[in-house]
Image 1 (tube, rainbow, N blue to C red):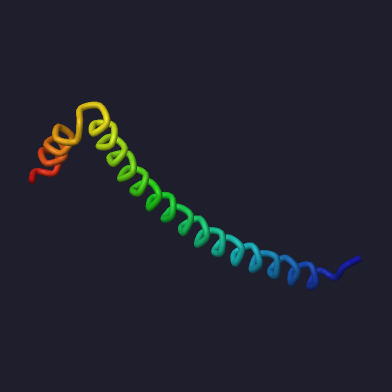
Image 2: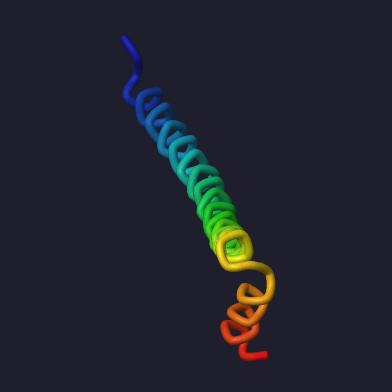
Length: 74
């Protein structure tokens, strides 16, 4: 049977380990979230490029160029 002092030290050690684990996980999830947001911005750019390519294929390059100019206010 463990001495109550040993149990208290073991409990404090476990609490410290759990706090460190939570801090590491919070940092890791923060990085994951940042990467997902970055990926979302990239996917939006790719989506717009695909729309421009579809327009160029369907209507010809001249019409697609005019649409892109209006879209970008050029």
